[in-house]
Length: 95
Image 1 (cartoon, rainbow, N blue to C red):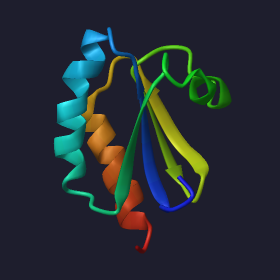
Image 2: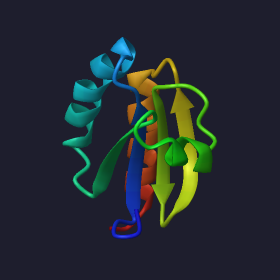
Image 3: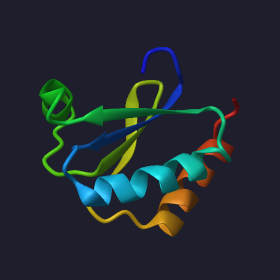
């Protein structure tokens, strides 16, 4: 996260069917935002990440700008509102 100013952290788990369904949609959405770095972490394989960012359920998305949390969304991701939030942030930040 230190190498990129805009990072979208995606915390999931292997046995989470919702997580598997969301990931391709998220990857497609982010093709419109080339300066956002997607970082995917499996909460079971790297529990330190879930602990550090206080993530209690999956899937969870956390957007960071210069290592500061801007927003998070968990469990039921509404892609229209997610895209709107990302678009506002992306356009507000001069990259």
